[in-house]
Image (cartoon, rainbow, N blue to C red; front, side, top):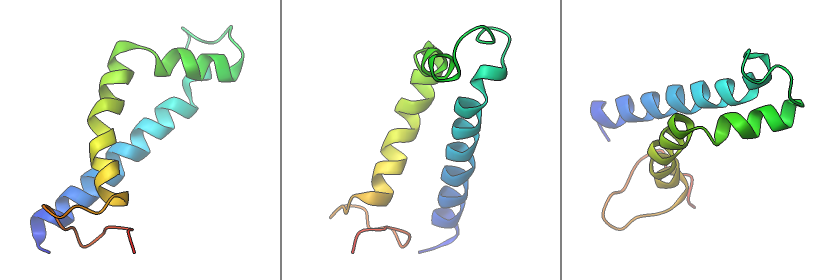
Length: 79
Protein backbone atom coordinates (compact mmCIF):
# COMPACT_ATOMS: atom_id res chain seq x y z
CA UNK A 1 0.00 0.00 0.00
CA UNK A 2 1.22 3.44 -0.75
CA UNK A 3 0.87 6.46 -2.98
CA UNK A 4 2.29 4.75 -6.06
CA UNK A 5 -0.27 1.96 -5.86
CA UNK A 6 -3.04 4.53 -5.47
CA UNK A 7 -1.75 6.35 -8.56
CA UNK A 8 -1.58 3.05 -10.45
CA UNK A 9 -5.14 2.15 -9.46
CA UNK A 10 -6.40 5.59 -10.51
CA UNK A 11 -4.54 5.42 -13.85
CA UNK A 12 -5.91 1.93 -14.48
CA UNK A 13 -9.46 3.13 -13.80
CA UNK A 14 -9.09 6.18 -16.06
CA UNK A 15 -7.47 4.22 -18.91
CA UNK A 16 -10.04 1.40 -18.72
CA UNK A 17 -12.90 3.90 -18.66
CA UNK A 18 -11.44 5.81 -21.61
CA UNK A 19 -11.03 2.60 -23.65
CA UNK A 20 -14.58 1.48 -22.81
CA UNK A 21 -16.01 4.85 -23.83
CA UNK A 22 -14.09 4.86 -27.12
CA UNK A 23 -15.28 1.30 -27.79
CA UNK A 24 -18.90 2.14 -27.01
CA UNK A 25 -18.93 5.37 -29.02
CA UNK A 26 -17.20 3.88 -32.11
CA UNK A 27 -20.46 3.89 -34.15
CA UNK A 28 -20.49 7.70 -33.89
CA UNK A 29 -17.10 7.99 -35.61
CA UNK A 30 -17.28 8.90 -39.29
CA UNK A 31 -15.18 5.86 -40.26
CA UNK A 32 -17.80 3.51 -38.83
CA UNK A 33 -20.99 5.55 -39.23
CA UNK A 34 -22.40 3.35 -42.01
CA UNK A 35 -21.86 0.10 -40.11
CA UNK A 36 -24.20 -1.63 -37.69
CA UNK A 37 -23.24 -0.46 -34.16
CA UNK A 38 -21.75 -3.79 -33.07
CA UNK A 39 -19.84 -4.17 -36.32
CA UNK A 40 -18.51 -0.63 -35.85
CA UNK A 41 -17.34 -1.53 -32.35
CA UNK A 42 -15.69 -4.71 -33.63
CA UNK A 43 -13.98 -2.75 -36.41
CA UNK A 44 -12.73 -0.27 -33.84
CA UNK A 45 -11.48 -3.06 -31.57
CA UNK A 46 -9.56 -4.66 -34.45
CA UNK A 47 -7.68 -1.46 -35.34
CA UNK A 48 -3.94 -1.79 -34.55
CA UNK A 49 -3.94 1.07 -32.01
CA UNK A 50 -6.99 -0.36 -30.25
CA UNK A 51 -5.34 -3.77 -30.05
CA UNK A 52 -2.22 -2.13 -28.62
CA UNK A 53 -4.35 -0.30 -26.03
CA UNK A 54 -6.04 -3.56 -25.06
CA UNK A 55 -2.73 -5.44 -24.86
CA UNK A 56 -1.44 -2.67 -22.59
CA UNK A 57 -4.57 -2.67 -20.45
CA UNK A 58 -5.02 -6.46 -20.12
CA UNK A 59 -2.13 -7.17 -17.71
CA UNK A 60 -3.18 -4.28 -15.48
CA UNK A 61 -6.75 -5.53 -15.36
CA UNK A 62 -5.58 -9.10 -14.80
CA UNK A 63 -3.53 -7.98 -11.82
CA UNK A 64 -6.74 -6.77 -10.18
CA UNK A 65 -8.55 -10.10 -10.62
CA UNK A 66 -5.69 -12.61 -10.33
CA UNK A 67 -3.78 -13.16 -7.13
CA UNK A 68 -0.02 -13.00 -7.47
CA UNK A 69 2.54 -14.27 -5.00
CA UNK A 70 5.08 -11.77 -6.34
CA UNK A 71 3.04 -8.59 -6.32
CA UNK A 72 0.32 -8.18 -3.74
CA UNK A 73 -2.00 -5.23 -4.34
CA UNK A 74 -4.44 -3.82 -1.82
CA UNK A 75 -7.18 -3.36 -4.42
CA UNK A 76 -7.10 -6.98 -5.57
CA UNK A 77 -10.58 -8.46 -5.96
CA UNK A 78 -9.41 -12.01 -5.26
CA UNK A 79 -10.85 -13.39 -2.04
